[in-house]
Amino acid sequence: MSAVSTADRSDSATTSHTGGGFAGAFTAEWTKLWSIRTPYVCLVVGLVVTAIFTFYYGSIARINDKPIQPVGNAPVSSAILTQFALVVLAVTIVTSEYSTSSVRTSLLWVPVRHRVQMAKALLSALVGFVMGVVFGVLGVALAWSPFRGHASFDMSKVIYQILAMAIYCALIGVMTVGVSFALRTAAGAVSVLFFVISALPSMLVGLGGPVLMAINDYMPQTAGGYLMLGNGKAPYPIAVSLLVIVAWAVAAHVAGAYVLRRKDA
Image (cartoon, rainbow, N blue to C red; front, side, top):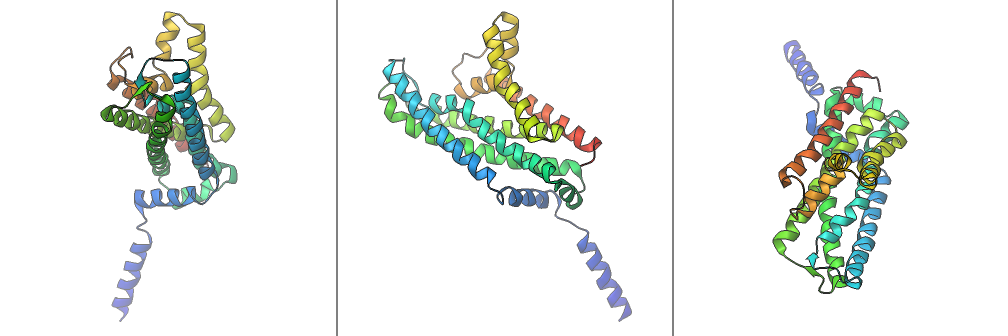
């Protein structure tokens, strides 16, 4: 009887320390994300902005008698705005826990710190990819009517642009999580991301010059535009556009991992 009890206690102890691994960490992050209001607000805002922007884009193209263009250009152009709905969502995934100190609990549950960051990055990428597809499909559907003959509909081109938009949104989500872990505050993360993604490219284009324009070509939003439009006007192959965005996402992820490892929660 004693031997049996000892074995039972041993099995119980082994089971209690097994943990859920990365799958458990991801499931926990998924549950925490959808238990707050912010992500729902961000997604609704993204849908509303997509609807208004793409309808307006198609209407302006018709009114100004623009040359015929792929209908997917409308939702791709709207990404310069809708991406920030996903940025705010991804920032919230990280900084909401720092603001309430609940990140300490998360790190007690998942003591392997890089696993927490990977789970949040994967969650942001997944949400970004799915919403990129939704934004793309919605934008194509709403822009087609106001274009009224000023847009072409090639199914292969539409699919390419929607998938490229989804990939871009996913990588922006990963980049956002990395920056958020590095800075740990919502205001700081959003400010830096807005500057790098949108403000700096606008400044580089506004100032002009071959050097600044060459730098702009390797900014994440510019490379994303080349990737999503896929019109052959990029100064480098489409694959390089993707690699540029991946490089920004990886750099941000590494910076976030470094801070997470070196500083206490």
